[in-house]
Image (cartoon, rainbow, N blue to C red; front, side, top):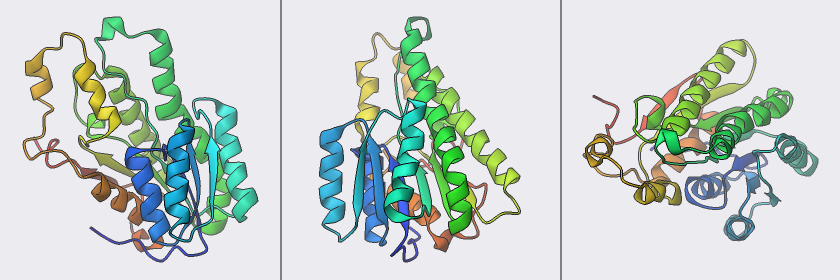
Length: 253
């Protein structure tokens, strides 16, 4: 796995940092030297992440907030800039994952999925761009193998991840001649609390679920986190508009 460059003196904003991939990403960035603004709705989880990353010698601010609300996205960027006077990396990791039969999906769950998975990254990016241009920084959006293949019972999730991929590519084109980078990491299934939601699906067609079962097993969370941290750093200066699949081959065919 490529290693991030030295990020000492730099600042990164990471969403979904209370657990799973978001927490692992925050730790990877802290190990690379970055100070952090970590964001999540889970206060207890954020506190644990903050303790770990501060233990690595980093300055860490905690934003306990629902990024499905636009004002909280802007507030997270503002808090980062106020504390560190800069943003060098924005890592959009947070996600809502609601496996369900399409006819049974509530409007509330649909709107929440779009708000957290798509609108929040856009709003965070929109607020962060002026600061990232100054720092010659990077945006790393975490999508999913679900962005590249149809997956039963995941219509809303897949739609948002595909849209986030195209948003990233469009931003990469829009800022082609300016000092900012936009990239995507698209993981396959990982052992996270999100993935556990599939086990609670009511009366699924098992033959459809088997089509998205990785033949080579699940992806290691730390491997994905290290890739996010790498793309967030100057070591990935040649990556712009890239989509990096880390899925143990599930989208290969």
